[in-house]
Image (tube, rainbow, N blue to C red; front, top):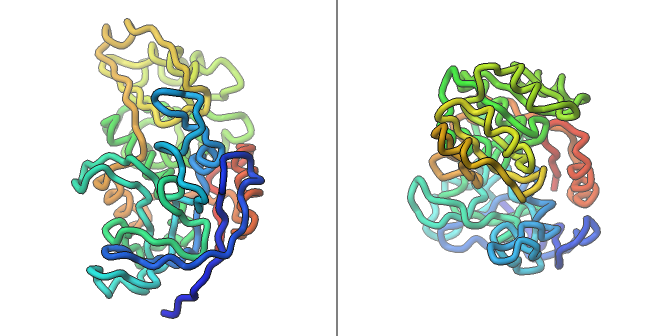
Length: 349
């Protein structure tokens, strides 16, 4: 398979607004030992793209500091964590039969080699990502999905959104028959949470906005409450016996207001802060009822293996909201930030 010497990419040289995304003609990266080169066919957008570009993650010692996903970014950086494509070349110590296979890349940079390793970095933040015609990745994190009936666009939506969702569900120990609350249910992670929780046999109560309620219900939610009204009262009416697991990408005031809705032994899993990161709650609602607040950052290798098995069997059907050519990455990020859509936005290099 012929590979050109240069490629088109969209990258950032500093933190800022969408205007800091600039086109560049750069050398095609060469796969190192243990790596493969992937020709990108689709790359999905995530909130991580916006927050990494803005430097909005803060640091443990300074919440206001401009930072990438897990620390300072080495600029210039090619964004994009979620890649589906075809293996164009392999480095040394890699099985040559991978060449030509359709793949999805696990974008996490892990702290260890084991199946339960924690993500401590992310492709598109701590290493170059898929807003480009090619990207390199460790061969052990490239998953063969050649036989999946899902399209490349659908496959590209899986790593961060569905990986994060599955990580939340696994860490929250969601069981069949339990009642689950999903906040921010119309976003990429939210739709994934609704679909996977429904597939697990849970009763899904979702929070969304009026114009998107029908789409969230179509994704599998049993009940949808309107965030424009009194959310807590609506949840209490929809789940009078309480919530077993909350899967929350909003945080903010919802945590303090929602904890009393948990049943005995309930779990509140947080994987985002769309509603604000400065959270306060009555700690008595925590210890008197044996409830847990659990932080969840993306997925483990075990979670990602489970996700890829679901993809091969098309057990989930990702929703594509819009597609853009690579050179319109800034416009695509602006569309993502407006949050008028349901599902995922995808770029086509």
